[in-house]
Length: 105
View 1 (cartoon, rainbow, N blue to C red):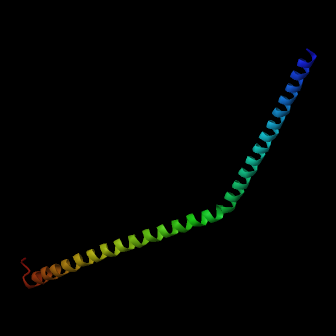
View 2 (view 1 turned 180 degrees about the horizontal axis):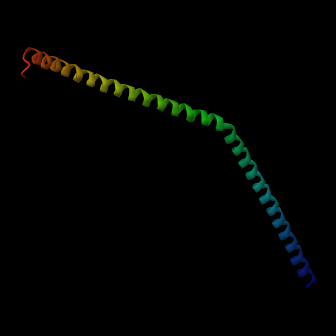
View 3 (view 1 turned 90 degrees about the vertical axis):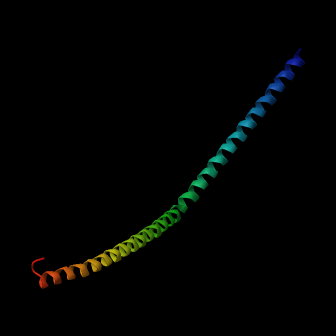
């Protein structure tokens, strides 16, 4: 009986050692994961200025394109209005001339 009890105690001790080793290994894995996460966070924070510059550059490019498009539309609209004004100018001149020639109109 003493021998069986001793074997049970030895088995329990080995089981506790296995549990302690597993706990130590778990802690190492956790620490390694935390370290990797910190490293990744640092790498990301170091890239923030680069990301910000990229964003600003793209926004600047889009703004310039928008301004160019608005200028083009304005120029087209201005040209159209100028053509209409030129057409009406001729009509107005003819109407004024007609009134001068024949005041009864």
